[in-house]
Length: 329
Image (cartoon, rainbow, N blue to C red; front, top):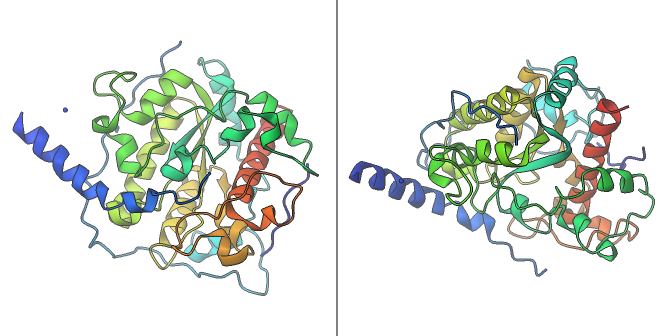
């Protein structure tokens, strides 16, 4: 497998909902895209997110460097050194036995091994992300990454799917709250996350949060809610892949440090998207420092591969390919 080479619903309820919507609206600006362009899994306990807090919470439990040091160090995460997440490769080099066992349990619990789901914000729900690979075959070119054609065929239908767990202004608290569930598809008191798992039955869940969470909650609640999301996934035998974010909206990369710390605690794979963007112009971000730069997913055009969106699509496909090769040998 050729990898992209990148270095280094009573009044009280209405009032609560109104407050939550006002707070989350503060994060919507981070999701204004400016580019043209059958078995029922159990709903597990712990499906209530931690309270959404004011944006004034800036206390961060961890810090991390913003640049990859010139001198490489072993690509190993050290829990004693929270900043060591920056050394992790884009695609992991091994999977834990826990993930392998979880995937096998998914085969006997009604999950669709040919399906994955996306959980995240606007840049996860947008059709820029993966959707082209279910659409016009002329809308993408694989170039030297031809082996990915097999994984595109394997997961056909999941790329263009509009996930119930991904939305504009999405945060971990939002995807855990029934208040934000699609009432036309989801059951009463069912969160968007549990609803998506029940309906789509994915074997794999791509978890991409952190940007809106910077203003939606404190780092402590972000970590607490991320663990609740992981617990729900594991209870349904879905393999969660935690993805670092490209931006550094919080200023110290603490959200990415939390994402990797949680992944390490649960022995889960990390797709280090942050690192994949580091050598792109402006780190693959538009001048706002939040949204990715756009180009079509033509992996054979060097100029396109200097933009954030093609790289994000490519490394996500590579992650799915890696998982498939490891779990379905």
